[in-house]
Image 1 (spheres, rainbow, N blue to C red):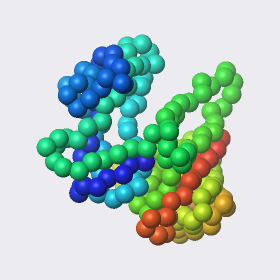
Image 2 (image 1 turned 60 degrees about the vertical axis):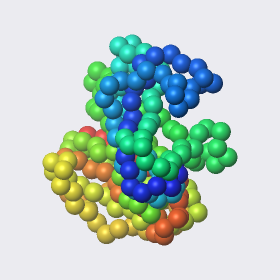
Image 3 (image 1 turned 180 degrees about the horizontal axis):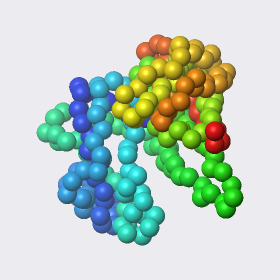
Image 4 (image 1 turned 90 degrees about the vertical axis):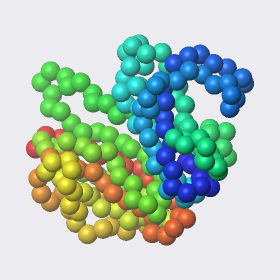
Length: 217
């Protein structure tokens, strides 16, 4: 979660390439970083935003040992501007705002076994549209189950695409009451699928859990 008191701006994410002591880091003394950002986050000047850092390629290098894991550094692309952007840490009172590392991977198929889908994703829904991961579902019969764990209703819809770029809404939007669940299934065959959801009022937030299960058609 991010709190931002400035107008629309971009934050850049850099790979940290040297060891450092958090107690000694300051504006004038910070660790070495990569020459180019690995991701850019666009902030809209609204409080309580949920932002996502796309670190897949870097995390794969950490896992393989190709790069040392010293973390990442987040900074404004224009450090001459006033204002600030603050992020909740794991010491924040509300655990729903803590930073979360999401890892998506496919289980290797056992000999003689058909591939299946069995995934879960967690989100904090706001009044801005949030999207689940895009999945290649061409060979599967599959079902989405969306759980609204929060205190506010959420609008959700299943999006389908032939090419991963142009999306259509599969059916009418579903309104999911607080502490309820809804199942969404496709009525046509496409290669790609994802969910879209948001709360109904500005300032309302709800914790969302998305389950996707499927087997070969």
